[in-house]
Length: 220
Ligand code: DX5
Ligand code: ZN
Image 1: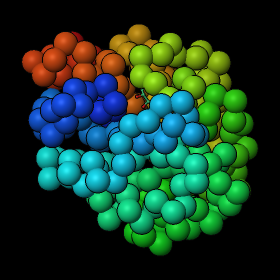
Image 2: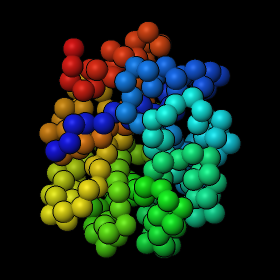
Image 3: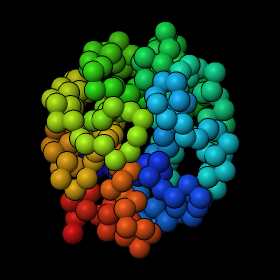
């Protein structure tokens, strides 16, 4: 298992000062910057689009981990790629042709991810693994930060860990939702090697970010 990567979700940052927030969380030790894109249709909330990703790009050299909660996703892949996404992840439910969507992301030269909602089974990825760089397990229902970790997802993480290892491919296994200093070690123990954290990263303001991220790594 790789050392865990921490991906703070800027959904929990101060939207009035997003550039500074991205700089601060980068300097505090974030490995990736997680960007939650919501359309008010696939999920019951609206956040940001490619223009904001583009505006934030100069504020950090860390990989931008873009989580698309939009339906359809296909018409927007190129815009997010050109805006500076490094990894683009989609939900299987957001379009009729997951395999083609992943091919499109790869053709744009980006890392490709699939996101599994709490009710979506691991088998949703079994026939697209050759196109995958990342699997993202939702441990809350997508739409909002600050929700409670769904314990039942730990079994799914463990099953996906086995599947990924058996595939022999280098696929990151990331978990998103309700990650804090108590749930982080449990997700890692189940097999996660990347953790999204919104509330737990940005709580307490910029002076606390480094300690927040260290705590998620199990340090301090
Ligand atoms: C939920 C988003 C998450 C969310 C996590 O739809 O995908 O990335 O921001 O927030 P916390 O860490 O507060 O649960
Ligand atoms: Zn997310």
